[in-house]
Image (cartoon, rainbow, N blue to C red):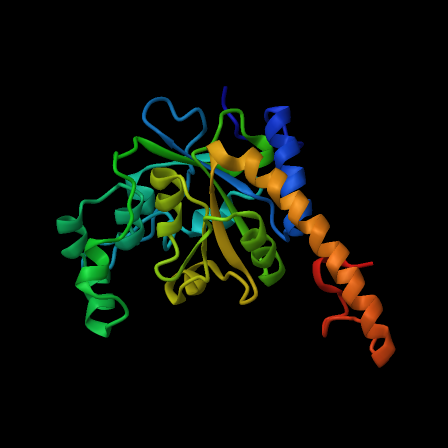
Length: 263
């Protein structure tokens, strides 16, 4: 079955429910997205956007980097191929489209190495998808018909606090941001990233947002633990807010929201 049109969620009821619960537990400002690495029929329409003219080195793609698909996939499901991802060689490496020796010859990899943003050793040891996909399918988790390999969320510091309490083996990662997808898919770990300068510039992701990649096979368990953790956090936050009233500030956070949704 193909998922293409924007409209009411039509995914598996289990994924719709998990999307709802995950959004509530982490207070997400953007819907969680499902990422599936397809080795056969993608089961979704192509992304369908033409690439701009290539740069002097011949590099282009449908979007500036694969992480941009995270932003595009909040309201529709689509399939992408290697050419769609090709403008970012680091992302193409982590997602299984390129081998290390090929990525190392690309001009954008040369630029980050020359700047000292990453080292050759870091590039060579980056987590990456081990089997080259035929397509990568992105779309809202609520619309998913098949179990995704990875569920990606964009969350704030409060969400990261909750995840840290709920997931004992949570990995906290830095740059490049995209490698958390490979960690979740290949190693089965829940991996969060503080983000990276390249990805933030290309996606326009707000400064307060971070990302987390959850293995699809662990999603239900992670959501269960998140709900238990956030309920306990609310209890502790209410205790602290009530205690703080003695000091005249009402226990409110600087932005007017009590931690963990205290009431």
